[in-house]
Length: 113
Image (cartoon, rainbow, N blue to C red):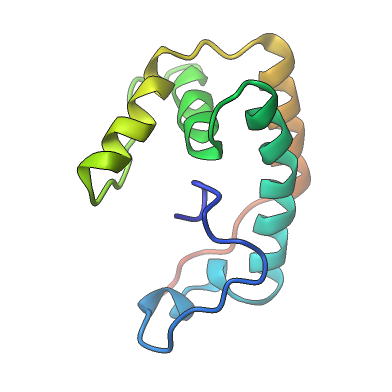
């Protein structure tokens, strides 16, 4: 859900939600990821696509990448994300995403939980 853009900056995890144990969902890492998503949302919106589609299309547009692993839990998620496989990102879109990715910087290691 993080790169799908469905977890907003003010999202409060249920105490039973295991994601709260991972560095990417708390503190500075959470803020950096949300800042990154804030840059992706207008790119996706301009193309009339979702942030999830944008993320998938960008991953499979990378040199040497032939597959994007998408953790869909429900059939509707598959239907929502499948169009990303046919989206040919423009050079401007790729550049904007890459610049946002560089500003985001490396993610913290998942580490043991």
